[in-house]
Image (cartoon, rainbow over all chains, first blue to last red; front, side, top):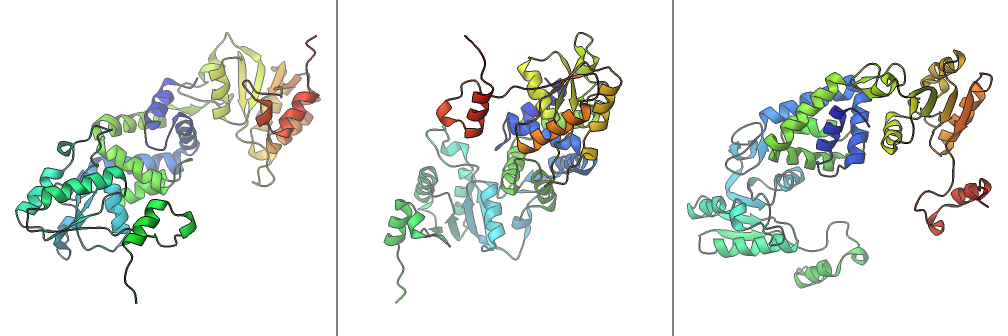
Length: 198
Length: 198
């Protein structure tokens, strides 16, 4: 068995998503073999992120500034609010670079199975944004899963009495998608929402 | 895009074995969401391991003490030296708890493809241990791969003139192994080295 200090580190690393005890052990040995070139820069980067990054009180994004860079950007359309499940999805949309509005991170999706109810998500804040009239359009960019769509329906219902346009991402064949490899649900959806191109 | 501090951390994490950019991003968000319960303990554990763990100058094991706990243990047989590829393999044998001798970590195996020659491994140290007569048996516990076995042959050849017994782990059907699922090489080896049980 290795030293208790190493076992403790492996135990903590193994809790990270996509890590297990075996890969955590390999990562620790990798770092110990490259103390100067990898271990020290990683420690510094972790400490910086730990100390500097805060959740934005407006949208829930993670950034070094409060409010975050997106919410602080006056050139963005603050009336358009894109609702996402988590910060990873927000970053994915930012990487795609198609949206110039702002975001609202729910912090999850409704799930009876996992015991996640409306009060566990940042839904009250979103209703507030719609109620005060500061939002003109709310774009639901939630996962195309049962939970994601249940959440989208719930939000649509809660928001329907406010003077705000509600939209959702379109569904269909993804770019580069071979019809042969797509699931039946996607194909049915793509047929039902077919566009007029004539 | 997320803050440059986060991007830098993701970049460094993505270099760890079994991590890529996407899983590194998920790990960072996981930590940011659990600053007190996960991020802080992980930082402390990493710093402790970084500062306390050293490579043992005798065997190459990683431990908080110099020499390591295995080499410092007077109840172990210091004449029996088990040669392993890396520290992960040493720990695996220690977990199995079958061996009460000491180790010698090579730091890799010979590989023409990866440009690893004898001078890149801790082979001179091993020869030294055999030459001084401090070793009575050298057990080659190297991987059953082409590189591992090439290394084992090379070591056997280099050690053959010294008064030391050289052995290697046995080969055959692993515990719980269904013959139907084993590769041909293992089956051939298991047949060739069949034991007399009559």
